[in-house]
Length: 347
Figure 1 (tube, rainbow, N blue to C red):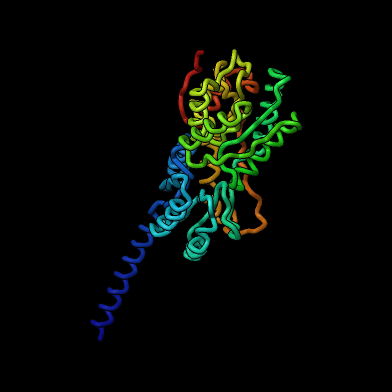
Figure 2 (tube, rainbow, N blue to C red):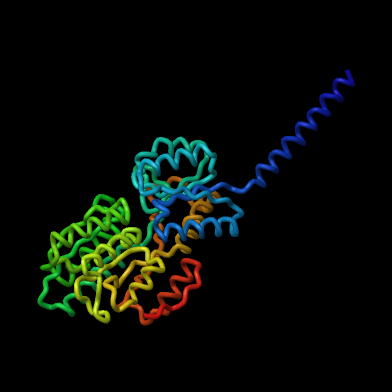
């Protein structure tokens, strides 16, 4: 009897040691973070993904896996399924059609996954949400473009168009509508052609611009709603003998963009290019805000579900030929946010 009791005690002690060891190992394992972007074909998304990996590791000892949405709603939904199946501890989502993942997201929340969202909300699922602060700068770009066109060509009426996402709520509220209002605040008689769908990327934007200019050669203000579209917009214009300025004076049109990668910084301050403004989304600050928000939920500082919670906005910067005092200011902003060491271009 005594021998049996001793054996049982030894077994219990061994089990306790094994359980404690397993608990320590689980505690020592780094948190796994799923970090979603709409497309890695975009320089801004490339950069803030790199910042997210770096910042999460340095600040929290966490591991980040980036999920590329490839500008495709099906891929975005499949990415979330994959993140859930892989046992991610937390995710920061960027999914265009959040309703497509809502049932799985509810299941993941019940299983303890922390979920936050960026740019696009998940309908009827009030997880903490981050947005780029776009509306004010889009309005300003529209206003400045109208003023500069009228100054250069007072007798040529403004005809303007936008290329990007005509049916995307976040783009409409942050880019399309405020840019429209900015132009109309200066030129209430301007002709507006609307937002043309170019959501599939650079080639799509190239074809849309060429069709537009052939149909309406009097177009003189264009808002290209992302840098991965602008790399199609500008070549399309140049191929048709447009996209140029005379020492900063518009000849054919004024183009505004979004994201402001290095190629746009260079072109904006080139006095011969018609690309003259871009809304600079800050990769470094965006990544920090998204990682910190997930960790605040993890540490109990922010509620996982709160219908009354305010949206967190990440401030943007207008990078423009007519707004920066010097090109050096724009280069300094770019190097800080994109983690690069570019030098001031010469023209």
